Amino acid sequence: MKKHSGFAVFFLYKKTKISLDKCIFFPYKEILTIREEFTMKKEILIIITAFFLMSLTALTGAYAGESKETESVTGTKEKVDVTGDGKKDLVFVKGIPFEEGTRYLKEIYLKIKASNGNTYKIDLDGGYDPTTEYKDLNHDSVKDIFVSIPTGGSGGLSNYYLYTLKDFKVVNLSVPEPLSVTSQFEDGYKASVRIEQTGQSYSFDLSERKVDYDRLGLYQDGKLNEPTELMVLPFGSLKPFKGEAGQYELIGIQRINGAYNADGIANLESTWVYEKGTWKLQHAKVIELKSH
Image (cartoon, rainbow, N blue to C red; front, top):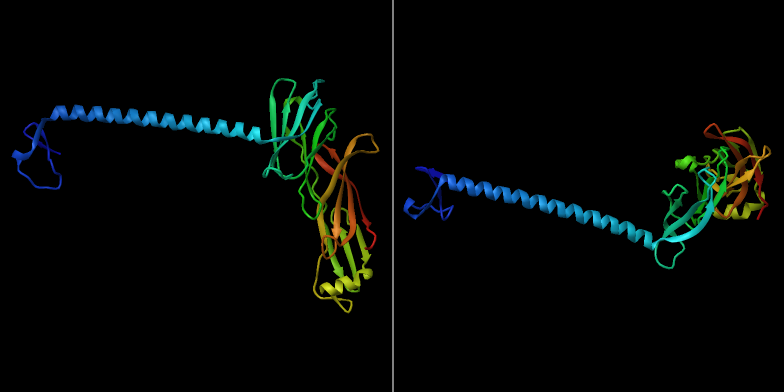
């Protein structure tokens, strides 16, 4: 656009050189007014479009949440006071199947309808057949929510969770970490383990498994072919129990396997008590399994 004697000049063809007699002349002020009106309309259109997109996003999110709740299945539903106000709360364990007809739940969560009228949701990992127990494990006179969710793997493992909702506040109390163990096969079809937390050591005579271990190439003429550790798994079982002091504690079992998962050698048993906001190891022992 060019100014010419107080007028704005618009070329009919931008890329074509033409004389002024082939141009259309408009008063410059009029062009400015048209331009301002066009800019204003453009801004209004942008605002309307943004508002529409925001509304659409909100509606989509609400629909997704509603759809998610609709496709969930209820595993358990129990009435129990988990807040400490003396009134029963409604605790649901819900999950969303991986696909129709399967037992595996890709998402699992707790939904608690508390006596104060509020609803609380706690997300958990996926798995099979979640179960809940309600025990006062942190010893504050209010029942906590202990959840077990089998993973379905060949090792028979599960995920475990512990929550309190005392005074209507959701707090993750966590569970103990599995014991740390140093282990190794030894010459002569033997093996040994050492519990790091306690220093306890155990030895195993595995000579009855000679044929199996030779076939697998683990040994040759009684000599270990290469340094090899045993398989010490995380908790395959973790359960509340009432201890000697009359308070609830946890007892855990970790499997110690040899050359493969079905080659069970021993169980590592540990008991735990919750004190001052943390889990403390009470006892640990290794129980050898009968040879297969």
